[in-house]
Length: 159
Image (cartoon, rainbow, N blue to C red; front, side):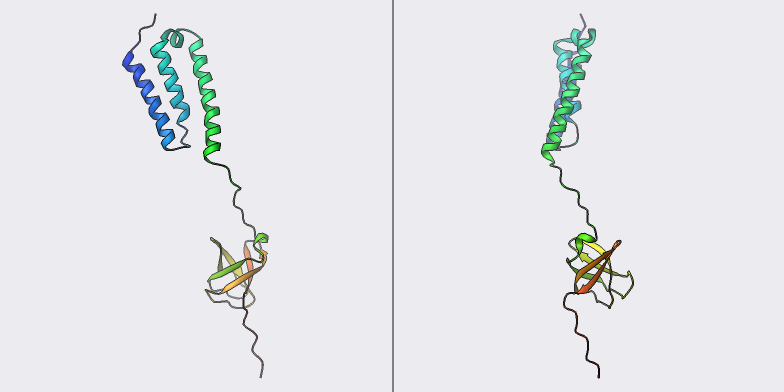
């Protein structure tokens, strides 16, 4: 017969309960697994100390609980955080989109910048375009965009 240190067993169970509560308060921290293991081991220590400490059955139970808790945690994480498609933007996908010039576009250089949605892209144009101008993406070139003003100014008639 194994002697049981009751305060130690209760402490193990309480720590397991605290970890489970923390997991519920902050989902996805992965505290469900150690919390469950500690609770089961603590209850086994308090109620069936011979099974936990003096037989092969105790470690097997703890290992099975760890595997079960891991499977439950994985399902729980999928449930609380539905996977979303990763955001990836390519220049080809931006053709035809509207943008606003944030840094003036200098012809045939990458000094200009445009904002499309929440992203800033380098911009190229054949003409100078001042900041604040609405532009349309006409072509993607590597990591830069060729743009043109939405309402291009008509050419001046020559004298």
